[in-house]
Amino acid sequence: MEEKKVWGIHTLDDNLFLKNNVIAIGWPDFGDLSKVTATREAFKERYAQIYPNDKPGAIPTSAGMLYRFIHEIKIGDYVVFPSKVDRMVNIGVVEGEYTYVDSEKEYVQQRKVKWLKHLPRTSFTQGALYEIGSAMSLFMVKNYADEYLSALDKGFKAALDNTDDDTIGATAEDIIESTKDYVLKELSRNLKGYALEEFIANLLQAMGYRTKLSPQGGDSGIDITAYKDELPPRILVQVKSQDSDIKEITIQSLKGAMTEGDYGLFVTLSHYTKKAQEYLEKTPIIKGINGSELVDLILKYYDSLDDKYKDMIPLKMVYIPVPKSEN
Image (cartoon, rainbow, N blue to C red):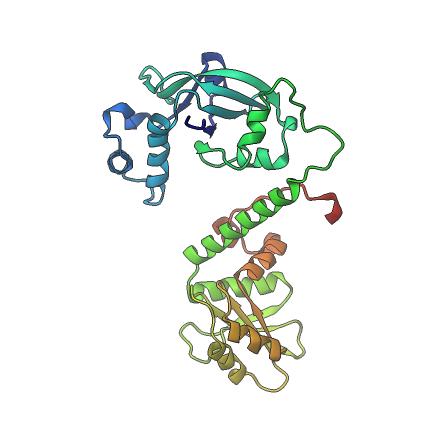
């Protein structure tokens, strides 16, 4: 017997889902999904034709959701739908095949469901809530599918007892890592070469350093000179935007440009080879910062960055739950 899948879905029209007993997704210009050849490639080709202005990377994701909605969701599968209007988690079972409803303005792709339970969000662990907080409109619930299915049992008890939620630590770590990934991707996408050097200079200024950028295209091996105040020592900074790991010889070139009393700072979006790390450990006057450490500094001093960089990497301060042992 085929195992029933658990799907997560989001909407901007909670009432449509709850009052009409349906799940639905949009893309009305795509038309009737049943008229497209039942392959992922055909859906991608159709999507690219209808939405030519979408970014190339968005095409397989969006086309994939449309394909899944008609061809992968089966009658008998379960659906988890978090409604915003009442902050409830609604769990149902798919009862109907795909239907194209052209009378709808937006949510034309529909399937009938039977809602089985409506539970407050507080009934579930933080990890389960995080999984259904996906940015995608339609997705498969994998890690916490059993928790949602257990909520359908008559003896289900909400996660409101006095025991600590052991998913909080993992959830917080997932959020942090996702944020780091986002910041690094935006840096790699928007800042190459001299543009990254300008950003690092601004970050150092936000940290309280006075900085001087070397002329663009210079070959001195020093990209930025930084001082904490008017007095020595000076910090010579080299910045690399390459995707590959930094080798020992590259750091040695920074050491060669330093004079007695100088300190060195090497900044990369990637990481360091094993030999480069060993060299840094043996050369304490040079500090190496990798991509992950750079993001930590960006998050710490974000508010003091120039507005153009905050517009490039838009972030919002939020509080996230952490295990009580970390408080």
